[in-house]
Amino acid sequence: MVRTLARYVRAESPSFDKAAVDGLGRVVAADWRRLRARVTFLPQKNRGNHLRAELWLGRGRPARQILILGHLDTVYDLGEIKKMPYQVRRGRASGPGALDMKSGLVIALFAAAALRDARLGPRKRLVFLWTSDEEIGSRTSRRAIEREAVRSDAVLVLEPGTGRAGRLKTARKGVGEMELHVIGRASHAGVAPQAGINAVHELALQLARIARFNDPRRGITVNADVVTGGTRANVIAGRASAWIDLRVTHAADAARLHRKFRALRPVLRGAKLQIRGGMDRPPMVRTGAVVRLFRQAQAVARELGWRAEESFSGGGSDANFTAALGIPTLDGLGGVGAGAHTPGEFVFVDSLPRRAALLAGLLLRL
Image: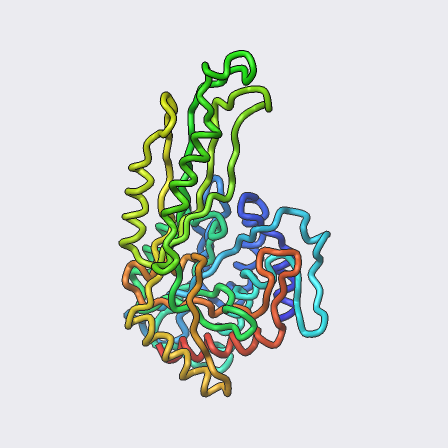
């Protein structure tokens, strides 16, 4: 597993680099073909190709399927492997994407290999879908994800577990982004300030309003994380913009939040607002079906001699899409480690076989 992880991490795969993501896809596809999986690529023009591997270990024809979901892309730029090379030290494997989520790709491969080698066939067809753009919103992969999900009895997502205990994820916040663009009027700040309409001032007034949209008790967070505006210190700013992160726990709050943004009106006379965006991922709600799936994972973990716990995540994943369709979904089945998306990212080596055993056992139960 460590050697396979090394190959995957060294095959860098930044979301925006199609050639690099496709390179990793070919490496992963070759491994699945060795398991005699039926491998197909879903071609994409501007993003990496998505990879689908279908495996049926039983006899006859399966009536239903289980979807195992993950992604090939990482947040790291090409060449980052030189700054943070793959290495294994003190039980930790580190490198760009080692935890999120190349460890998940390895876990799925070895879980499937274990079932095949032990001649233990799940009752249902296994469909492994590895997408290329999860880290940037899943815009090209969402349709394929949802198409496979509605054919499936359950969806198992190989994002990393939560914390050092690797807790499984039974709920996630919905995620979105709004763009707020202010159009004012540029003017000389000293000679004719009265002729200008300061877009930066208007934006500041709007952001003060937007800050009041936060409601931590309901799990609503609204944060302006990128702000730009103006050209020079002696010129009244003619334009200003903000990119605003949205997180909600309840689907109804997403609609209300959207209406609040659309209801914003300029404060300064003559200023104009342009508002774009919305929710990209609906919330993953902890339904009864999700809980039942988690209980099955708990039972497998007990058989393996450890205790599986659950968690709620403020971040989003492709699990949000499948859960919103009403398909029982369990997330966080991937590697256990820390530092995802940072130079210190690592996965605990001993978590790899344990998580593969968990996934294999869960596939047999379903």
